[in-house]
Image (cartoon, rainbow, N blue to C red; front, top):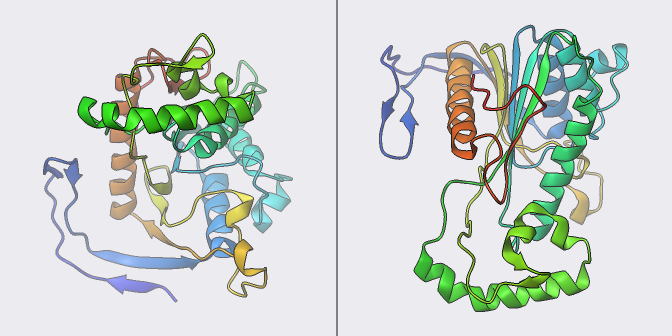
Length: 289
């Protein structure tokens, strides 16, 4: 059932506290919990299908091949999340997707999966016509928090061993952006790399038209799909909770997304970062919201 939470409402703009904007307490009407992906995925699909202006998505893992589950998607013959976003763009919606990147060596599999998912989405977006009224923009971003030179130097011997094993066991590893940065003539650098990342943009949210959002909670891929029955084997189950929020709280979510998107677009400067960065279709370089 919908739950209400009432707290003091402030009309002041968010104040900066050192780690980013702090949002005021809000008077919230309906805060609807979405238990498991079986509730969250259809709700997110419905939001994007109903969007008229913008759809902003930010996830740690987002696979555009994830199957749709809502009746609304079935009625429009949208079989996966790639279809949902293509459909939105064709209706004139500006779709922006911000995906987390991962430490290329120590979290290589997540780094590989994230880039594979992102490039798959870009391939789908490439099918949009030149006169498409909307767009799909993608940003794959490493967290701005990085290890300092002393820690990098201390860790590099162990990281270099791991990188050597990775390159010998996976011939394709050198093609990923972060690995290319860490090798020289096919072998790991002798000296420590310039940069290492211990953190990711660990956030899962979707907001449409600045008015309705789902926050939490859960990423979008088949591995995370489950329902309250949890009838799958234990190793294949997944439990997560998201929230559907509307109005002023959704606008706070959208403001957060826009602030992060604009900051990362500026930081990566249209693809200038050596490891990862901006990956927008032609004509959308340096796009801010």
